[in-house]
Amino acid sequence: MNVIVHTDGGSRGNPGRAAVGAVLEECRCVNMSTCLENERKIIGEISKTIGETTNNVAEYTAVIEALKMITTNEELMHSGQHKSLTVQFFLDSSLVVNQLNGLFKIKDERLHGLYRLVLELLQMCKGKVTFAYIPREQNRHADMLVNRALDA
Image (cartoon, rainbow, N blue to C red; front, top):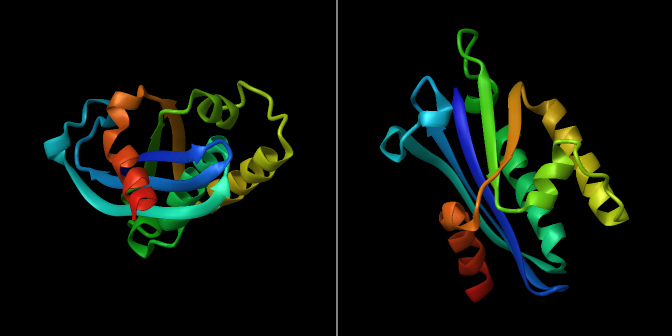
């Protein structure tokens, strides 16, 4: 099974009131990089506040919440012997993507703790997980979920 995940985290103020958003979509095509929106089915959304924190913590927390949703989804975790799970994350935070891909060092201790939690959750995923940067304009759905939570 192929899953595309868009995540976003945001805070109003830095630190400030923060929220996370994520949209998980099942991709029904063979090549995920060319999967069109009409070939995707939304299988989960997250839109919730997370208290007062920084934007970077919110970005990491969005990834963590999406990974938790994936690892607790029986259908995804046990998608059958003939199908392997492939998850592609898209974030508009180049810092978090580069840290998760091992390109940037993590100096902030809070972020390092969140990074370790991501690694633990990745070990629970039975499949390949990748992280890619996208411009904010291509992350509108996840951004809308963050703002929905902050506006509530």
